[in-house]
Image 1 (cartoon, rainbow, N blue to C red):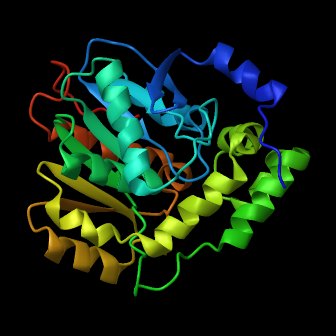
Image 2: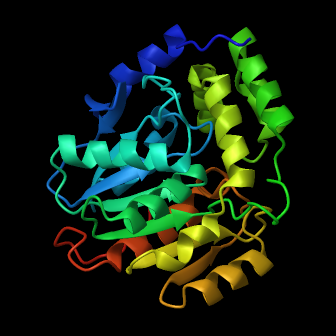
Length: 291
């Protein structure tokens, strides 16, 4: 059994981040949120299956002129409690607790991968008012749709390396295209991911159908997907467009599933465009500068 841990190097990261740690209670779980502050519309950032909040710093800090980014350590990752359940509904309840307890008025939602699924569920459930959503490469797998492209065994191997003690070079074997800084950030933080939570989430990718939620996501919503993504393929994007004609879909070039890591500048430009399309979502500055 792998033992979840926060490495000393990961703790040191928190002192360097331009964000304040905040705490929220959801059920019996304490959840950690990185709040980047600012006067803009709140943007609740929901990371993927093995992406603790600190590993999204390079995205959040590039959005702080537009919005007030708040990045959630999803239960079982980072500093948040592991919790006892890891269904999509339970993850959505956690996000809703963040909105309520931090007093976020009609926030925007942005999720990557598993976080995109969570954002869709929050928007559909309607338990908290949201302004709009940007979903980046949500897993379209589910019952009758084939397996998720990355096997659970691969995730478990990476977690085992992290608990043993990994580094940027070893992470680069898995993710050679990433900037060195992000390879090293993953090396520092991956051990904070609970193996049971990852396994349950992976099970959800194959047993909870994204298309049970997607057609009911209210506008405005944008779905970003990587041009070489095995998670949102061309056929999957076409199905998503047909299932929710009111949504805007945008293909991000030169990247796979890990859009913002594979192509940081292209991914961030697409995300900024999507955020600017939401009425009253940004500050007064009308420019669309790149990251």
